[in-house]
Image (tube, rainbow, N blue to C red; front, side, top):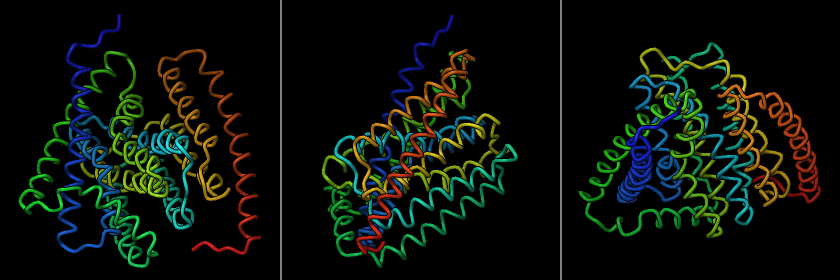
Length: 370
């Protein structure tokens, strides 16, 4: 009989709360310090704030890699990226549709797709080793330098939007003494470390008690939990009408997860991060496909519409159902898998057709991607 020990679920919940709270303290403190140093709000928004929402993923995957729970480390990164696009962007679009800027279409989404393909290629030998990790981590350094340079050329409207968003993140903290701001960063890091340990240990216990792999737990429970900051940020931005920030937050977080989080985890893991054939066959392709499908969606009017958001959420539900069936070797997986593949192909074809039509209308109007 399957039984989960009494402390496991409370530890999981406490770990999730610690991750969200720790990320909040860390981002507020770091953003305030950056502003004190005279760094432009748009740079702070594109780096400190955007990457700060991925602090839980970094803490959990680094902790898992150091403790030898490498399946959790990999599942957390790949699963979080899938959650970010299918569930978080989908739910945010359902709130009222999401506006997508030309910059995100022209640069950020292609970079996200390219980074996903790079991670897949590096994983083809069934491992993310230290050399692979270094390659990925160097990528985040190059990407950050490029972000800072590109930020200086942003249009005034974009700069104003990021300035407003950064001020909301800083809140009253920006007027506090430097020692308080530094203290917030230290406290945030400490809470993140505690939360990551609790989450990794409880997730491992759950996987053992339920008889499923740590990879599946990492792809689902851990991934959703560590994506809570992105969910909160994107949903809040969608409710406030700052819908371009909602998309940029998710895309930037996915790039950071693959380059920094997976890269650092590969370096920290003593024997590298093993990548199963199942992950190469299912999870990586789902992550890349979810990234790729954004392009034809956003080309149709530079928006993610409500019905498109509903479809993205529905695909996430199907993906999780298939994971559960597959982990239990249920006969239904032989039906759900092919059916989902056929439906996904038809939906992707629909998105491509509508995206192409939107691209043609855009060209006919004489507009250009700025």
